[in-house]
Image 1 (tube, rainbow, N blue to C red):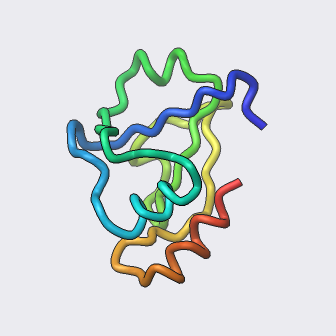
Image 2: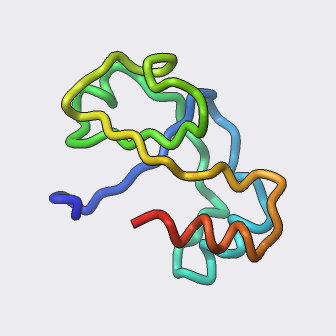
Image 3: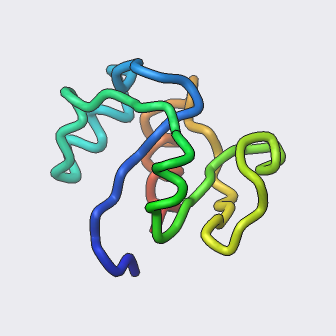
Length: 96
C-alpha cells in the first residue's frame, strides 16, 4: 500500500508521549512498541517531503489542519478515546 513503507505519525500538538493504556497495549500485541514514541507537531517541511498524508479527524474538517492537496487523504476512522478495549480493537481493525 505504501511505497516506501516508512510510516510516521504526527500530531497537531507537539511533544506529548503516546497515551498509555488500551491503544498502547493493543499496538504492542500487534508487534508495535509505541512506549518510547513521542508525537511531533507537523511542520511544512514534513508535509513537503511526505508521499501521502492521511488525516483521521473524526468530524473536524480537514481544511482546519491542511490546505487541500493531492497528497492528503481523509480516513473516516472513529476516535477511540474513552472507548472500551473491545471497541478500540474494532476501530483499530478499520485501519488498513
